[in-house]
Image 1 (cartoon, rainbow, N blue to C red):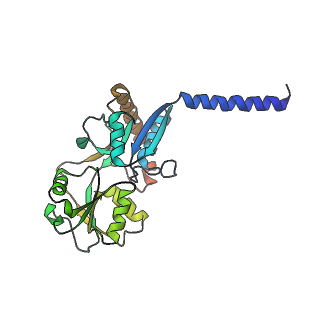
Image 2: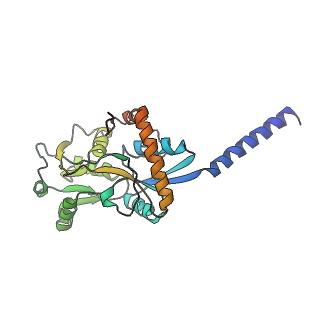
Image 3: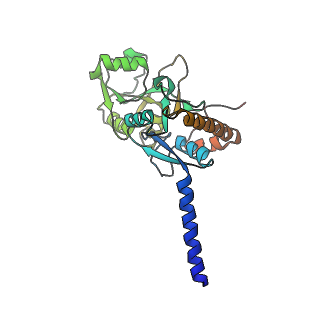
Length: 261
């Protein structure tokens, strides 16, 4: 057998070994709608810090992360049914039936943005005379959901792909007067769309207790989900102690929401 044949045979065996290794990896299916800076387009340089945390923790343990962006309601349904393993970015209080790790994705501040200089959120009554943009299926506070039920004509509910981006464009075009949303998300898109000097911050709702966004695991495979939670909690703890988490968050212009003593 000549040297050329040996080289070809070696390459074939190497590729075959790589494929077998990939087939042997246990997959974790991760879903959510695109909501930067938590999660964005799959395979991009900026997939979102939540996706990058999952990749850093689980791929080092031999798992393969399959991140699949999709509309929010479908993502919730897929994790609830067991079709997917992990949902990114939900409030624990609003999603009973899932299994949650201890580690979170940071505080969820419900804030308001407007195209009207001088307008400030001062409680539910301050929304009475404005058209408010919301995203279908997102976890808003109970009082806001009740307001939508009572007066649906005062709210524009967006659904489908890139809902926050589309609502911000509606706000810029004065088709709505106020947008209610997660502060980290809205601020990210205001900057990326070049709208920070066009639209105005109108204050935040003061929650009685802090609200945190979280990963959520399917309850259809409880033992596996609890194992994934344990791996995630330990992995994020290591990332925080070594500074890897802060380094990752800086990429998105953020800081760790938990300060080590």
